[in-house]
Image (cartoon, rainbow, N blue to C red):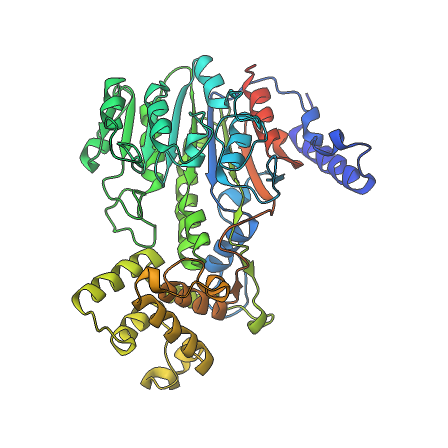
Length: 502
């Protein structure tokens, strides 16, 4: 048998040669050199981690943030998964667009087919049902777990158990969860549990009728184990349309994504092994809102969840495969901003104490108690939670506060955002310029995150997704197969080969 070190060297040389020489036809362009590896032993345990909206720049932003304090020589910190021995690069386009959505990319990852944006578990004709890796492995005898920080019937988790023409069919997706016979669901709540018009039977009842234990308290969740049977463990603390709280907003005793992964391992423990898909869905949501600090905190909480799998793999080194990837990039995030040139100051982000969602709620409560709220009333709260100060502030002359001082133009933009925020939503500016400035988010909070991000040296190009490729990181049984540059559908096909299922 070839020594693993030499195998990796030969793979790297072959990959480089392919890049230099090019490919002779379109079919060859989508095939990784690593596919020539013969997999002889299937992993017993497979972890598939997906950072929704997480491309290399979101990962690198977390590395820069944790590696620098604004003093001394700059550096980056490796995240645990960026140190994995195998790294690949994956395209994300779907059947109709180079800028995809989570439904189509998750379907590609879970089922190996290209489809339209918004479509879950169906081919591009929107009628032919796919067979996901989770369904294949369930038939092969493995237990299946699905975990997410967002609602459990949101697009990415849904692609691993449901088949619907529209990701907005939340009720239908939830009923398919109930009949999936998968073993463990964990994380956020169920969107529209009684249907869009609130006239359907409560899907929680249907889930329980199908043999699931629904655990909604911290005590009940922590008590779960391999004898619990089929489980849906819903976070006791919810935020932002039924999702788990942003990591930046979570309290010390709140359950985090890592806790749901750890509990999933215990629930899924069995002789045949398991497959667990774990999504950090709010990286995407934070990037949609152009909130860099909140996104970075989500990536770091995601890293904590990956660490649980790493610890497990260290106990089962010859039986475990861990994959970490994104489904697409969100926001067009960049490390580098026109106004700061080559300068970055990520240490400024540490001044942000809450997510844009938590700040919106805070301002909403203030408006309710004081309809005549002024910018002067809100300024101390801005200063406390984002660190930004005006040039007239008495602290503006303090050396350590210099980078937080807003220029007259920046302060003007912030005040304009405040004025828009104080209006009823229907009365706000609907012009194209306003859409570019605020993207449909609260004008005050998005103005704050833009100002702080830009001062830190972070830019954004969109409030939507982009077509950037994403990295995939792998360690464990069959990890070598994931090196190279290939399409997202190939992730599914590589898993089918590694897990030895048809």
